[in-house]
Amino acid sequence: MIDIAWNQFTPWSALAGGLVIGVAASLFVLLNGRIAGISGILGGLLTPVRGDVGWRIAFVGGMIIAPLVWALFSTLPPIEVKAGYPLIIVAGLLVGFGTRYGSGCTSGHGVCGLSRFSPRSLMATVVFMAAGFVTVYLIRHALGA
Amino acid sequence: MRYTLASLVAGFVFGFGLLLSGMANPEKVLGFLDLFGAWDPSLALVMAGAIAVGVIAFAIARRRHLSFLGFEMKLPSGNNITSRLVIGSLLFGAGWGLAGFCPGPGLVALGAGELKAVVFVIAMIAGMGLFQLAERPQQSP
Picture 1 (cartoon, chains in turn cyan, orange):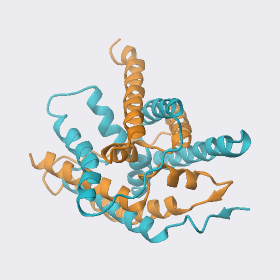
Picture 2: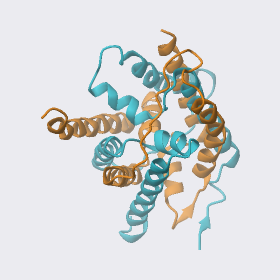
Picture 3: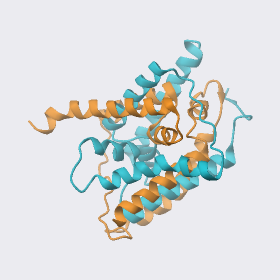
């Protein structure tokens, strides 16, 4: 039934990267008492509240700086984007609106929410993954690309 | 200041982890979402690794009133599964499947200088802005 792409599968780097992401989310909750939800952190900048801006910029900045620092020491892993610009724009609008309306994304619901056994986050994760599976099925197989 | 610095470090480590995991690459993410094609299960291992660490941290966090730096714990308390949660997640998942970007990898790929990620992040912020516009009348009647 399921055809695993063994030539694409990168279990060790995936697991190692996952552990590092877990460390980041752990640092954030243990030091600052917050959920490391990227969409919420970024979205909060659109309605700035005094005293609640700097740390958000710092977190987002840290994420953006990471590849720059990486590139100082090693070559960056490939970043391949096959979608064209119109599709990218529609995708961005959906991701931006959807994550705010649904109160979270892969980090807030997926990583942090599942780590604290939140039923809401489990539901959100099942729904956005299912929607992702269906969307890719439609694009790659049903509609034919 | 310590709060901001801890945020910077957490964001940096998060971005580093995304790069290491391969998930900053939309094609890799779409390989996972292509369940009915040649399926790349890597993303599942990323989640498993992150959650394995996170479970411990959140178990510690749950018992504390203040963080280790002395800040108030701000953990979500709601348990209701609402239509907003489901509809929002549906829209997000559809957008995720269209391009292979979710918010974190979008920011990391932007930092890596990928032009399409710049466009994605601008559109994503616009989408968040639309949400704020839609919310406004309800917030201040």
